[in-house]
Image 1 (tube, rainbow, N blue to C red):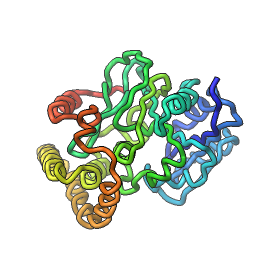
Image 2 (image 1 turned 90 degrees about the vertical axis):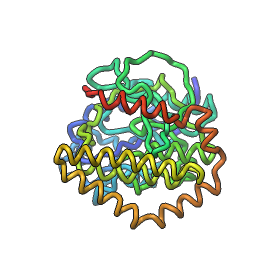
Image 3 (image 1 turned 60 degrees about the vertical axis):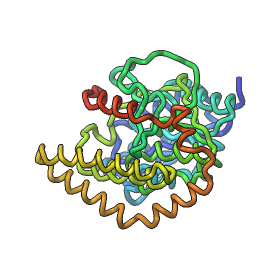
Amino acid sequence: MISEPYVTVIVLNFNGKRYLRNCLSSLRLINYSKSQYEVLLIDNGSMDGSVELVAREFPWVRIISLNQNFGFGGGNNRGVKFAKGDYIAFLNNDTQVSKDWLIELVKASIDNSVSICAGKTVLMKNHNLIDYAGGKFTINGRGYSIDFLKPDNGKKDCFFTAYPCAASMLVKTTVFRELSGFDEDYFACLDDTDLGWRGWLSGHKTLFCPSSFIYHYYGGTAGEGKFSPLKTFHSTKGPMITILKNLELKNLFSGIGLALSYDLTEALLLIKSSNMACLKMKIKAYFWLIRNLGNILRKRHFIQKTRKYSDKWLLDMGFLATLSETFREYSRLSKLSPQA
């Protein structure tokens, strides 16, 4: 039996009342000493009675009520300020944890001397299908989950991977703060991909631990629709932020070119489907990038000055997908119809 360091479990919530009973009830049953973990519900200004429900039915959960929706990164970063744990475990509100979820993450972190560990997520409505089982970066500033919506292969061995999925991840509190937490510019998309990318560049490895797993409503809180205006806005600016911050200069313009090509293709699809609301948000995202370019480049300066691994190293290690891998995966994903 390993020692059990004190862990703060952070559950971020925004109008997720319908999921909270299932999520919090499962947390109370985990195989981890109750004296060695706390659960914080960080509420991003919900208006659906979420806070009242948790206060009434889960008095052991510490509630931090924020006065507005600060997004994924902003809400979690504010929650970490209240954390007492040596480790932070981030957990989506639309999940149900297995009994060994936390102990397996902690064990993997200690046994492998790593600061960031990611657990496996499978679909709530089909426990045999993968939601996240490791990930890869792509040069156009995005990332993808390995084996997404493929049958679970049942492998138990840990392995290093590009980034953690923040639906279920563990990170040492000191390291999270060293990395300045999640970049709040993303708000809703790619926050965890960027954290893993910056983690590797600064020398902090991400380990995937398949023996720690949760069940997840795919798109539960965010919604499943690919072309919603909000998703379009954040999924357009997010990849460009990642490219501008994290790629080396010799790959920067290739990344920008590929991202522009991706966005142009998506814009043409929006025009074809007469989805003007999403097209306007896509254009708005580029104006946002122009206005915030100075701040993004200041972050780039720090990241590049302190980086420990090259883009080529990430590519050779299999963390950065090749162009052929990327196109092959995008083609596969375009044909999927998720059933969460």
